Image (cartoon, rainbow, N blue to C red; front, side):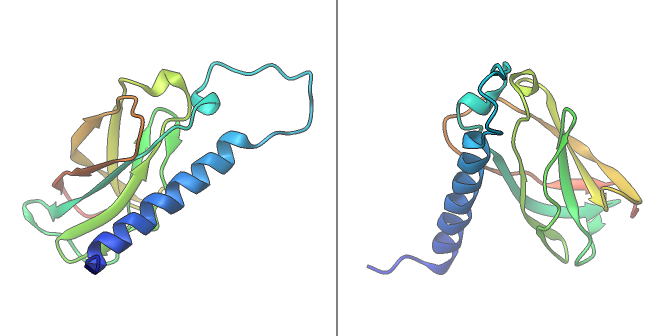
Length: 143
């Protein structure tokens, strides 16, 4: 039985994220005197990956406007896919153990330029695997 294309893409994205996060968690600067900090780096910090409907003031959002997430002092990548009224693959992972229990916030626009925060948030909890979440986002206006 052949796997549907959507599932192959999801599997590929998941494996790529796991490999990238594993590489970051295993990185060393070569200094044996540095003590480990109390972060999630000792265990792989799995991300949450969000997709859903995207509206601006209740109307379908525009195509190709970046959507990104923030958690604590960290920001997820903003190279996701935005089609009219739909966003996919907005990911965020914790930077430290202190991020567990904090709110994930979502933004429309560019992280270093104009952006607008969504009405919705999501609480980050520790997880032993990537978590895929369908979350519809509404933004009060365009950036």
